[in-house]
Image 1: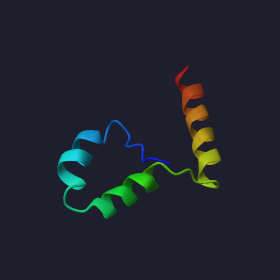
Image 2 (image 1 turned 120 degrees about the vertical axis):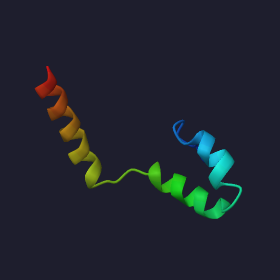
Image 3 (image 1 turned 60 degrees about the vertical axis):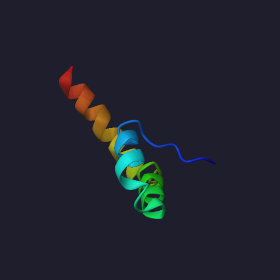
Length: 55
């Protein structure tokens, strides 16, 4: 599966990071896009609660 770089990171990733250390850059992006089975539900609840409070 090809690496999908988040749009907020594309410019810096292509110009600053990947040319100097491609392996580190790839691993960093890969880890920022992974889910976390224990933390994801807690974050979803936090977002729901924030939305509820802002209504």
